[in-house]
Image 1: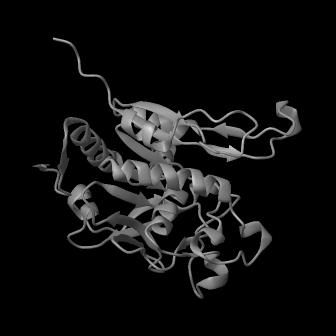
Image 2: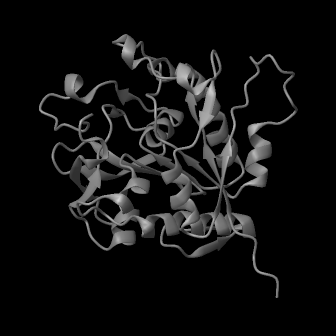
Length: 275
């Protein structure tokens, strides 16, 4: 009996538009993958593939390859964390130059997101990825938590990076309560200065910071699984401080990817629905 081919999960690339001189790529844009995300995916038996940008403004003749072609070949999409979402992507102007984000990456990841959704494939957004999902569904973001949410807790500390931990609580009856068997609070990493402001149409908040009610997880009310978390589950296995084991949530995503490969979808409870 031939073993089943492992699931194939696409990971969006992080972009480095101005690489340090010591890397030897003067004037070149780099596309890269932080290894924790790939290793987290592979630890559950799936293969990880970084998807390059698909831009028309390139010196090379653009190949006839689209986001839809990648969605056809892959079973699910993971949107990495990284640079801010450009406020112009959700109809605002940056209130500070350093909050301008990466509009090029926005366009690239939005195209991937829509292609996977159109083909009924699951999407998992981490940190920036969750914020981008919210924007894709018509939502907006706070450009800076400290300045725009009076009394909010600190959600980022450059000196601590992924050692900054806070609690989140899950909405009763949510996918997260079903998955983890608790409403919390549970400890997670916190590495973000922006967050969800207006929730996009068709999205539901499933988790909140226990300190200030900042939205920490969203799930789309759709035929295929679209989920985003504000923390970094791929960093959790290396933390010294106790943090939430997010393996059960990744298993839900993998089940949805396997269901999409086989031509059916799953309810949030995990049971299949044939189309």
